[in-house]
Image (cartoon, rainbow, N blue to C red; front, side):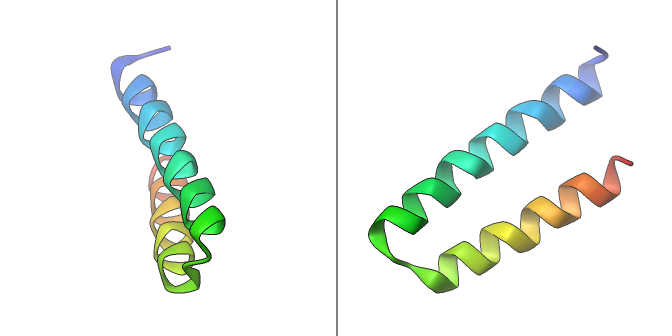
Length: 46
């Protein structure tokens, strides 16, 4: 795995952790923001 892929992997993991927290606290707006950011990260690195 190259350095860029490793950084992306960490970012995705971090955002998934934040998303899980947003679900637990019931913050729908925050969930949508995190989903949007994850989509940007995954499409950017394809």
